[in-house]
Length: 214
Image (tube, rainbow, N blue to C red; front, side, top):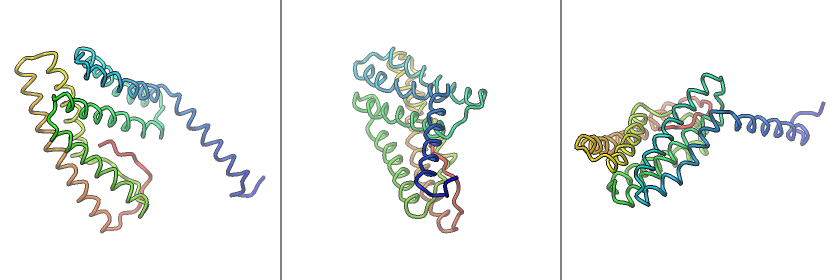
């Protein structure tokens, strides 16, 4: 048996890790998540082309797949570390892309998109710096972060729906979620900075990596 930390032992460990990642990649929940990632360019194309029916349909399918992959992961006992990272990445890419595109086509005022991107940039930058400097790896989303994500999802859905269904109540709900997105995104960003500062001052012990989905 080769001693620890020899090139042979590291090679075996690398192959085992690569095999584990490949096995996780082909699970049904992760395939659904990857399918959701593939929807993103088609949703963007339909928004730019003004095909709102198709954009809404693809958005609904993406939302159903988001709920279904989590359900399958629990039912089939296929909850993986790869899935814990892929799922929030897919959600964030879809949301960020749609906020940006809907602002370009003048359906969402730029101030809302700027606040969403600014908060995400602050959080990602802070996570990278803390991981590199003090090894902090636990970045669980707060209740405000989850509320912000919910409002962003609802905003995108109702903005697209308002292009298909022009009933007054749809427009009212759309405006309500736009305001809620601005408020909760701002609050969650400020709360994240305060909470991180509190953890650093009190020397909170390091925890296993947990991807942020906020």
